[in-house]
Image: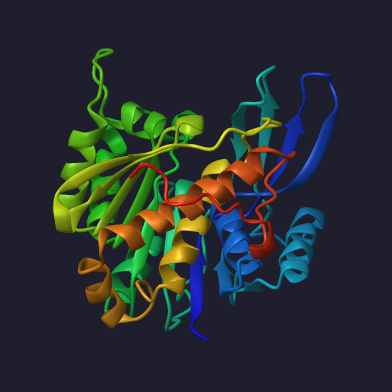
Length: 315
């Protein structure tokens, strides 16, 4: 079995609910993706940056419980990062961060797929270490990227756009929410054409580019066919949206791994030549995984036995 690497932040979410209650649980977009992949049966290592403190110990315990390995030197930070998440009456979350991101190089060299994204790819000094790891990994295997942007810690879109596009170009698969794309490319309130941006990203390098649309599903750009497909969402009773995009990502990557379209360098060529049906099947699995996650509290991605059989859909 190939061993896959996820690089990025692991932190403690401090969740403030509408009723005034406060709870703490482990979070961080890359950590959520790592756990999601492991629950779907894949061997995963998380390279991150946590402290030798109570919060760091909690993160290590959660990773152990789910069978995700912690990369070497990942627990050598001065402190563990936190994110205060405030839920509104609809269950949507807004975040305020206290971050420490300076992973100790070299990051692990594994034979399988590499995924990264979120804060880890824009917050210096660690973002440069992550970029170097992605560049180095491309000679060994496939890569994926989810910008998962946090405007409150980034600043203005212009300051990060070129770096985001560089990582898009280094990726075989890229996924972003419609909100992320609109923030990154919107100017003076002008409407952003998601299809145009997905085409732009595909021209930079990835074989599969996806924009998620919340409960409305996803837009998928298939590079081989120069085709954009709208995949509908699944209707569920919403509890909250925490971790929804991460479960989408892990579900999609899991399906592509199962199909042999991610992993070593040869998988990159198989992905480029993959047919429409197998790629849309991966998006179906992603939507199913995300739907399960939003139907329960917190970031709690599904195991294989829970995945909804979404069917082929009107593709």
